[in-house]
Image 1 (tube, helix red, strand yellow):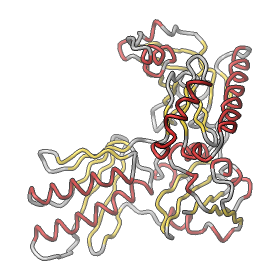
Image 2 (cartoon, helix red, strand yellow; image 1 turned 135 degrees about the vertical axis):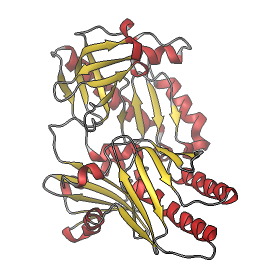
Image 3 (cartoon, rainbow, N blue to C red; image 1 turned 120 degrees about the vertical axis):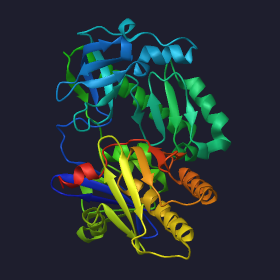
Image 4 (cartoon, helix red, strand yellow; image 1 turned 180 degrees about the vertical axis):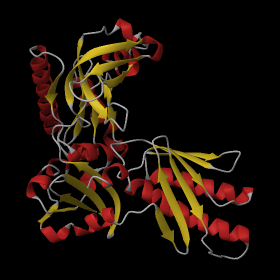
Length: 382
């Protein structure tokens, strides 16, 4: 598995390549003045909406951030204690300063989604000062009880930890050292915020490398190639120490070519898949375009099977999130069930994907967790 990092003057891309096929691409603009997922900001409460269990927080630039009531530290405390979620007005008042973290960037007319439940991702741990619980990567089932015991012993107050897969290959001393580093950083941020006037940026996120580390198991990467030493260095803390490193301008052209070649219509044999992204949802249409595989139903089924492979690949490649509606070619009920089984299997390959089913009108519904901006929103700016 190879990680390819491409840096241009105004944007940066990172891609995963498996068996010479690019499976995932993330792209972001190189603009340290904009809000990014992971930014920690001392915000100012501008509006409290108890009826929507939310509040708007002024962040100092752009639109106010949306803070849902469940993302408050006090709400999380009540949840872990088995209590009832408090009203937002019991936790916040207009004009109050509050330390928050950006979860998702604002898209189009919407402001960013923010949380008081800040997290800090490191090489082996995700540190959560307000979580009140700890968890272990599913791949570390043999060490689960040992790691949870470590968290129970070393976490204080409401701290919580998520043990990443890489935690399974280090000694307890290393875990404790990283926990202390996170804790000290958090205390520094709290002290800084206590002396400043809101709204103000307190800590800028590490950027694309940190975002991807939360979405993809980067410790599986065996080699990294880039046209920029500085861009590549941002990823090294999230990779295994024995990863192969290559720097050169000719190593990353495949990513740029893949991005430049993306079109709304993709050929699958003679058939077509058409992808249309809107603010509300992504609509996907499957078209035979004259392809034939026997009877009409057989043709529709075979094209749909090919389409499923391409659609699920394109969702990852284009970083598409939110509601997805697919207009598959019409098949009988028995073949519909086969298609549903194939799609449910795709959930195992893409943890962000949640498969629904066929509607009464024959459309297929899916949902994919949003993580950063879709590639389409950036292509026009590249």
